[in-house]
Image 1 (tube, helix red, strand yellow):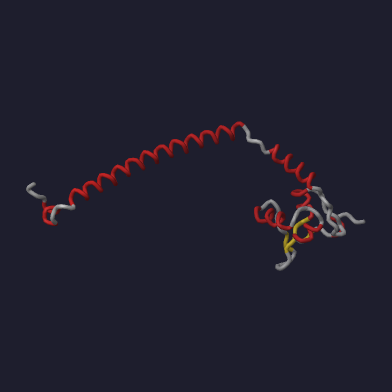
Image 2 (cartoon, one colour):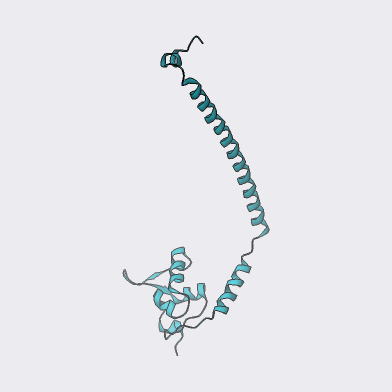
Length: 145
């Protein structure tokens, strides 16, 4: 049996999914996000280099197009492994704490501003209510009250 690199150096997204690298949707998302780059041999056909698939998803494919079955337990182990590698660094925690504190201060300023605006609206409403009993002339030019 030939190795994947001997049969073809590039495959379509569907073929990569059949070979067991990942689901078609996952590969498409990886292409869209830029994790996987497409190779174009001509204007119409776009494919992915097998070496690119191996780099991103690991060497899982087979030359004959038969996918490798990956158990859900294996996928869970891969998920746990990647999440444990991405734990926040102390500097990231510090930056996020600073950002949270800044957002809390901004929220407090917005609340103060909201209270001030509420007071302005109430004062304007009182003024309009007080003026309802007066004539247009009195409201415009004042009155001798």
